[in-house]
Amino acid sequence: MSQPINTLKQQLTLASVSLNEPSSTASLPSPWFVRALQAFSGWLAALFLLGFIATGVVFVMESPLVSLVVGSLLMGGAFALLRAARSDVLEHMALAFSLAGQILVAWPAAEMWGVSANLWWVLLALQCALALVMPSQVHRSMSAFLASLALAMALAAHGLEPVAIGLVVLVLTLLWLNECRWPGWISAIQAWGVGLLAGLLVLQGQAYSGQRGWFLDLGVQWIGPWLANWLGIALVALALSGVIHQAFRQHSQPAIAQRLAMYGAVALVAVLSFYMPGFGAGVTVLLLGFAIGHWLLMGSGVLLLLMAVSSYYYWLDVTLLMKSLMLLAMGALLLTLRLALKRWLLNRWLTLNKSVAVGDANEQ
Picture 1 (cartoon, rainbow, N blue to C red):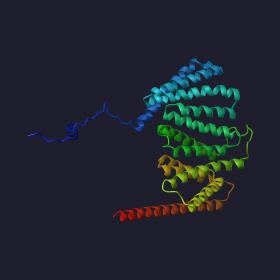
Picture 2 (spheres, one colour):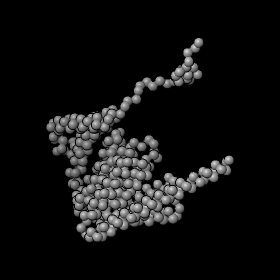
Picture 3 (cartoon, rainbow, N blue to C red):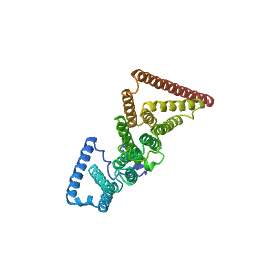
Picture 4 (tube, rainbow, N blue to C red):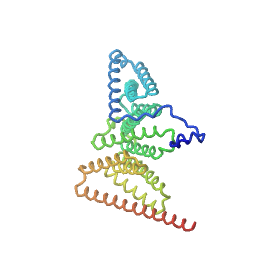
């Protein structure tokens, strides 16, 4: 009497189906606190090593050419280390070496042009190049973050601080909305998006603190401050229109009335952003997070909105009565938009179910 076949593997073997046994088991990801400890160890080791090297090569900072060569070598070594890195310790050590190399490369530019817009444009180009070529998520996020700060400083030298924030919001929106368009670059786009999001939070925090750009009065003013504010608001409104259009396109093509309502809401947000700086950026990031289901973006959008409302509340040029009325109107607007979207989605769901039921009845 033959033994019963109990396992699926035995059944497939008797059916002449070949099985590919895995050569190695998949490794489990390390917990976050272990990775944080490894990152701290990498930075600590890199700082000790850089300090030991700096004690022997102090003359590097005295020669711009030597500083440029040594900085390039450090960035090249960081690139090679990142290509071979298989642990967080080596990855963060390479990041520390790369940042040290960037400082040495920026030193000759600072001596040539001084602390001016030309220096920040050079640093912006350097950070963009590193964000493209460095094979590390952490390094790409850091380069995108530093690129956003360099862009803000470069534009602040010409009185265009609000334009920098609008550009960061627009680029951030375009990256996250087109995340899946290039499958081979998904990880890089996510890293750039996180870095730009961190840069946006820092820039908005600097704007709310009342500190203007470091070098705002050193360059030629391209346009007036009033036009610069509206240009930055227009960039944020363009990003918000893209987010709303993407959200509608996921369900169906919006009708003419819906498009007019969408453009009216964007215009109203733009007007409110003029009196409440940062409100449009917060709404854009929050809706972007809802559109793509990203919790970090949603949390950052809520934080930006809270910062905007808090800053507006302590604005001394407007009375408390006007502030209260403005906040009341804004809350009513948001509740109305929520109700309208809820009814629209309900009508779409009912229409879809009705069409499916009619189709099933016709088939029967």
